[in-house]
Length: 98
Image 1: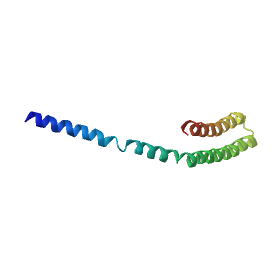
Image 2: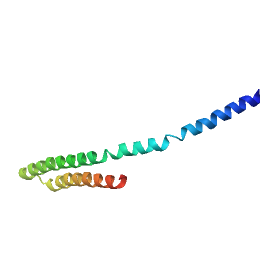
Image 3: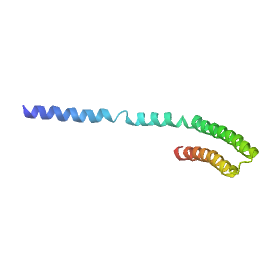
Image 4: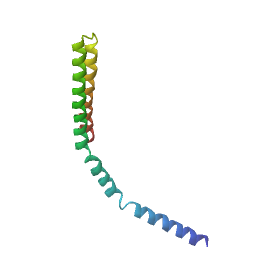
């Protein structure tokens, strides 16, 4: 009785391992294709966000400059740095993952 149970358990474990290996590579390939298909629209979206932030920053810096605020250079540097960070981050992520 114990031999039959042991034999049935071993057969079940061996057959489960065989079934598990069949679709793993296909699933990983499909997931990779799905993730990489989002990089082009995502990169363009980040560039667009950077452009909008640049325009908003330009308006803010201009308004501070026009009003004679002494803190204009600090504001310009922070807005410009944010735009450069977004552009560089999008480029590095794209080159790293693709």
